[in-house]
Image (cartoon, rainbow, N blue to C red; front, side, top):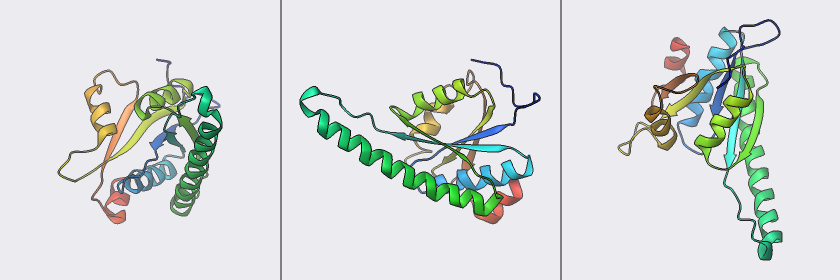
Amino acid sequence: MKRRRSNEAGHKRKYLVVIDDTEECDRAVYWAANRAARTHSQIVMLRVIEAVDRNQQWLGVADIMKAEQEDAAKAVLKKYAKRIHEVAKLEPERVIREGVPAEEMLKVIEQDDDIGILVLAADSGKEGPGPLVTSVAKSSGTFPITVAIVPGHLSDEELEAMS
């Protein structure tokens, strides 16, 4: 992994938030927005869409499916960008990738050496914290950047007090 450069001249620390369809995603966004505002940092939102099978026979259908997924991803990112702007008056970067979320997240971290903190929210349900949090936890000893895991049950007021 590359050396992080967010503290060097011409660079700015970035918080990476993976945007998914879970209820607790808003908790990660809210905490990251507050924290970024307080530390004069930036936010990168990552939305990973499902890889579309590019079978030649169905190429037209695959292209339509990918376009629909990209449109939906843009809409979700727009929603969370609005939330970030309301909370912190920041305009986040928006990244859409196709593939496996954990793999694409690592690629984004590798490609942007200003990203210094990954922010995830943990589900407070009986099924566990969620697949991405579980995946990151398994590699936490060798993970390339700091990880902040926000409890999904906390209120705006509680998160603001901690950010």
